[in-house]
Image 1 (cartoon, rainbow, N blue to C red):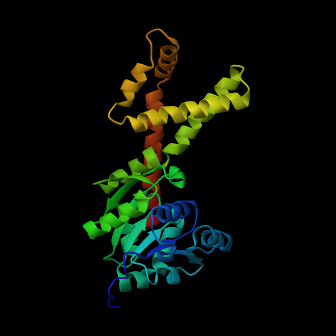
Image 2 (image 1 turned 120 degrees about the vertical axis):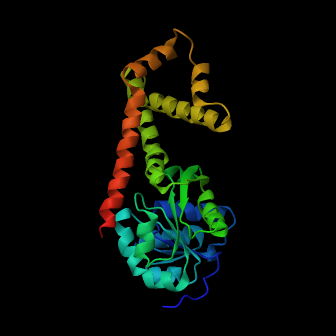
Image 3 (image 1 turned 90 degrees about the horizontal axis):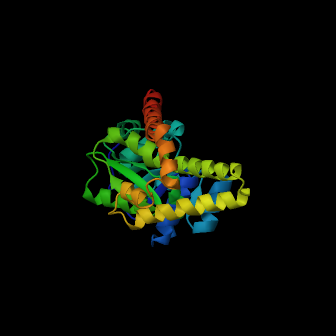
Length: 282
């Protein structure tokens, strides 16, 4: 099928209307993108209706209708659904040659391109859940077909919900997934552990939870607002030799806290590779 002139860059189609699509749509609208320029393909009628109601975008079950006028497609579906979605859109992709942004964990750009019929510009993105409140962190990898103009489009889409960082080697995207994509869950686990430790030490649960949350929030803000200072230096500033903080840090060290974190990141990285291998066989 011969390719037509690509649709305008201002038109963006989302395939999937779940949490990540919702956060990106909300961010784009907040940063000035017209709702009329956004369309969503989402088979769940309740999710589609909520997007229409909350953001004024067009949303429905038909993916072909969602992409018909869009120069940029955002594949916001689960890894196990990506192959079926791409093959269903292959003819449209070959006709229109869109920029395709995928947020599916573990799925490589060459897989996406192949499933769409080849010759398609693909950006692989790994945002994280703080994107829901505009505080996300996203790693981006672009294939050779993605020129500077389309890189800027990808940055605009993902930058609407937080920081973006380009990754030169796609093999490192599984590490990005393990560090920042899955990272919020590690943080929540730490807050849970601090809460439980406070309760075990005699604090009321609501007090322990509030102290843990606000302490972690404050520490995170200190890191974000003083990025020139290394985390190790901030840690040293609050650690008096022989004091209470030093006792806790010594306990972490004796229990090999750094290795526990490293092992967790390696496990998440490996799982990303396994997802790619598994779904690549389809």
